[in-house]
Image 1 (cartoon, one colour):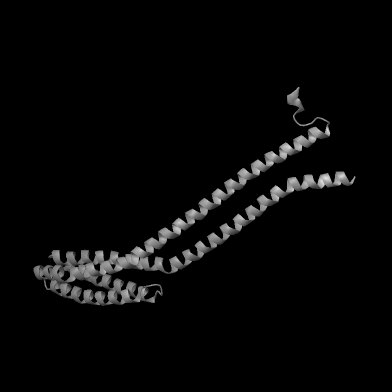
Image 2: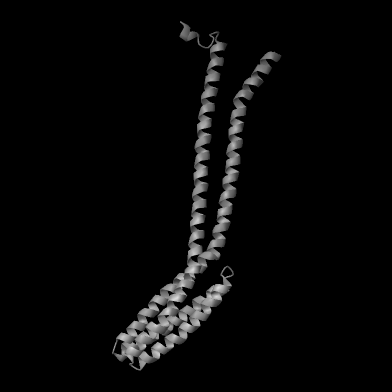
Length: 229
């Protein structure tokens, strides 16, 4: 009786232990994946509240600079006073947008304050030079306005665009790192699931073979006797 009980316990342990190992590995993998996803989520939140917001603001400023240049050329190239006046108004509005976006950069704690201070100085100089171009355009001094813009304003615009790139490029690099981390987490989770599935199949085949051998032995037919006939 005791021998049968002991044999039953050994059989149960042989069948149970491998599956407990699989469950333990699955639980460990799930915990690791959860921690990885949580870390990525926290990094993403910091990115979207910080670097991503700074990048968007800098890109908006870049686009506004392009629109401002287009408005200035339009103000200079048109002889019609109504079109010139409209273009001048647009250029001044775009200057206001630049100042609003600059205020957003200053308020963001993740921004480089030294770079922001330099950008602020250049934008102030750009505003002053733009106003001179607009005054000449309003006075219908087209050639003087164009020459002043090309010699004095465009170099400042190029400097501002270079400074804005310092906010955009690091944010793009951080964005790529986040995407790479997410891909690695997904790949590792897939590898873990496939590996556990393969191990489960192997253990299931082993258990099936073991149970079949016990069944044959209980019927008084040792395992392999069918092949010997």
